[in-house]
Length: 485
Ligand code: HEM
Image 1 (cartoon, rainbow, N blue to C red):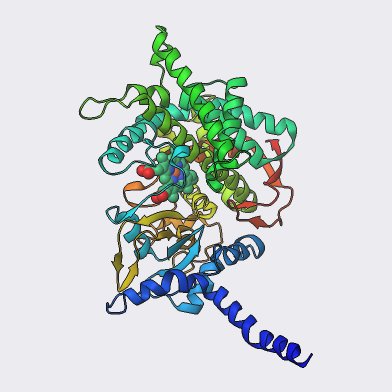
Image 2: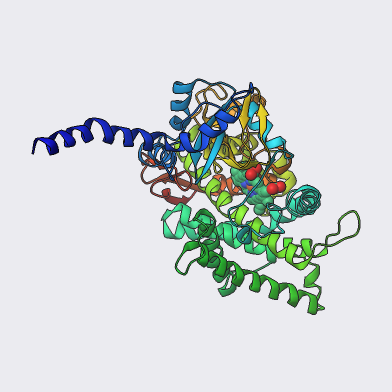
């Protein structure tokens, strides 16, 4: 009896804390210790940080800050408090992999611009498309990027797109007022996808577009899910839906090739990519065209619908900004005399440009950009080990009061001056900077024009909290009451 009691006490005071200690430091012991030993004779060392529990690493801490506390920036703040700023790098273990977080402008710039040392790696290339811009590298990346930028991000393309998106947008605004009260994010998803269908492949609203919408929703969900290809998993469903979406798009390509009618000459991105030639006269293969259409839809769908949602939200919260915007756009309505606003008109709207930039800064659609170290990399005395993920924590750049004064305040006038170098990376940086950045800005500007000149609205739940996973959005999806003015 006495023996078992003392055994119990021994367990309690000795073994349990020891096991707890080992578990707590497991990832540091497993991943960081061997590297630190290997580096012991070198000057460079691993950045400071904590790598978390077995398998899950720091995910519970990340989720704690993002999901439960809803103070995402304090995840990095707490590290700064504990380890200091160092050279803007921390070691951790997140999203299933040992990783280095880069959180300062210089560390982010270094990682995003040094493609020779850091590559983009997708958990599932099959979903984004192995020959799509986001997945290819080097010369292939430069070639495809050149063609895509011509199709979606240059003034000639944007001029067409500006006119193409407005019928859908104005019709949607009309429907919103008929409903009176709407959950904005649901509506912006619909209108964004309808417009994507239009300027990507000239699909009109109807059953084909509706099924594409459903299929792409599955693919978006699959990209965020763990890449497990079993029946019932989101990943498996996403792969199947992608196949079906590709079949619809391929059929459209074939229809265009067979048909003699001159609608083939109409401009949309599918047609643009089918026709375009690089400087050697080489066209994209069918697989390249299809992979790129899919990856562009994936990149543009959620990002655009979310940013538009945030635009309406912030203008409802900051009426003095709304008034200044109206003052800029109302005279234009007279000038346009019932016609749609053009790309060139929008370029003249200087205050709108600042509002759009401020919306995009605060919307923080992309929290992070991910890279993988191709080799052991040394940066300012710290080692980034080969094969580890590097997480460019771009959200933190935009929410840091050292970069943007009173960062949570929606203040378009801060854009009277350019931001400090390297502090504004909403669209990433380096050779993979967002290929649709001008298109995104344009779509927000066009929406603002119609919204502020024709409608008034207010938030149903102005005090509602914001959730940050899977992306930042007010919890109620932004419910508004909207009327014509
Ligand atoms: C406000 C809206 C948007 C934001 C905040 C945004 C943000 C970003 C960011 C941060 C990256 C870099 C990712 C990395 O370095 O790993 C990126 C890349 C990309 N974005 Fe966007 N994006 C937006 C809208 C769009 C739109 C509308 C399109 C096209 C329809 C688009 C197409 C792309 C593509 C193709 C890439 C990959 C570029 C490459 O690998 O060369 N984005 N975006």
